[in-house]
Image (cartoon, rainbow, N blue to C red; front, side):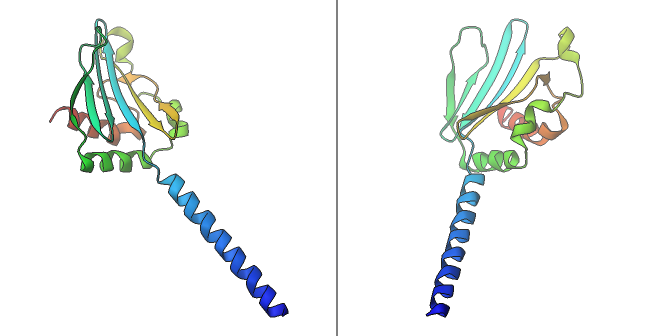
Length: 148
């Protein structure tokens, strides 16, 4: 009888640990809900928002109107999520821009905002074309999507 209860406890602990690991893995693999790339200069604004269903673009910015420019390509959405999974989103606000041309209108003020699990993660402002090193791959990929 004692061996049976030891076996029961062992199986229970094994199942508990297995379930905990699966739950943790599922949470860590959660997709983002939206990503926004915004560039602002004196008198103009460019904003592209991408979620799992659609891509919207606001290239004027002053009238508040957005245009849906198409459905999100599933392969591009997967790539965006893979690039974001490499980032420490909680630390993103601390990543500094390598240049400061935006301070004197030498470059558009640029930010990246990521919405995931009900939280919004936002970069510090940086010069268009010169993101913090940690955001370089993601920024370049988003730019490639815009320039297609």
